[in-house]
Amino acid sequence: MLVRASELRLLDVINVVDGRKLGYVYDVDVDVETGRIRALLVPGEGRRLVSLFGRRPDIAIPWKRVRKIGVDVILVHLPQTTEEHR
Image (tube, rainbow, N blue to C red; front, side, top):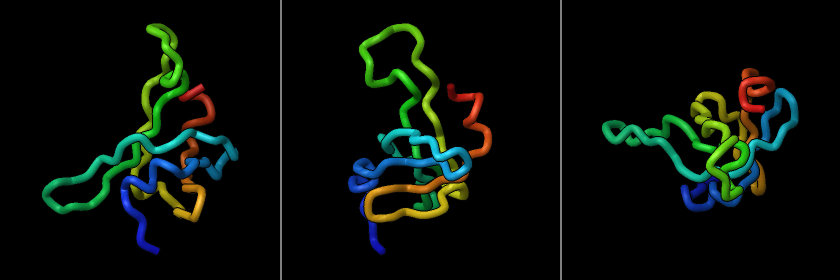
C-alpha cells in the first residue's frame, strides 16, 4: 500500500498498548541524507486549544514503533505513554 505524507494527517494514531487515541499526525521527521522517515509527530494534549498553559509536549513516535498503517488508522506500540503524556 502506497501512502503519501499528506494522507497520514487524516489518520487516527492509536497506541496498541492501551488502546488510547493519540491524535493525528501533524508532521513527519525525515532523515534528509537517507530519505527515511525517523518519526511521526503527534500534537500533545491541549495543542488544539487556544491556551498558553497546560499544553503537553508533542509526541514523537519513532518509525520503528509504527506497527501498521491502515485505511483509516495508524497503530503504534508506545508503552511509555500511559503516564508520561497524561
